[in-house]
Amino acid sequence: MLELNENNFEKETHDKTMPVVVDFWAPWCGPCKMMGPGFEELSKDFAKRMKFAKMNTDENMGIPSQFGIRGIPTLIFFNKGEEIDRIVGALGKDALKKKVEEVLKKI
Image 1: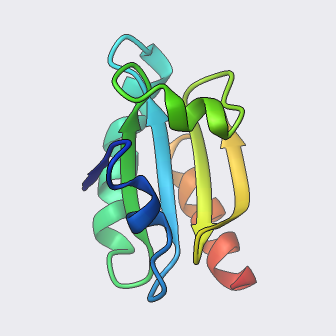
Image 2: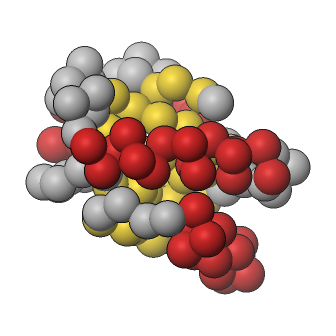
Image 3: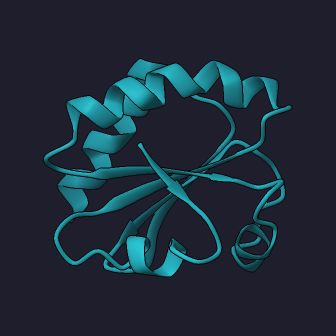
């Protein structure tokens, strides 16, 4: 799992080889903790098709603000640096898998 911060965010989300999904989360966020294990499992299942990353919003406030993130967890899907989809709120593993598959079909 890739950990993003203010220094590597742009480089990692502008990946030209595969899309990237970023989980904006915080350690105190209950729904974030619930969604974490499913996100982690899917990162392994889709490792050859999509890059999975996490950004702690408590430690990196600038980028979440730049993207207008008001609630967490928020997942943003990027393709070559452009936001192509977004989810606000926790999803179970099956729903998240379905969303990842939908995004991959659009690319």
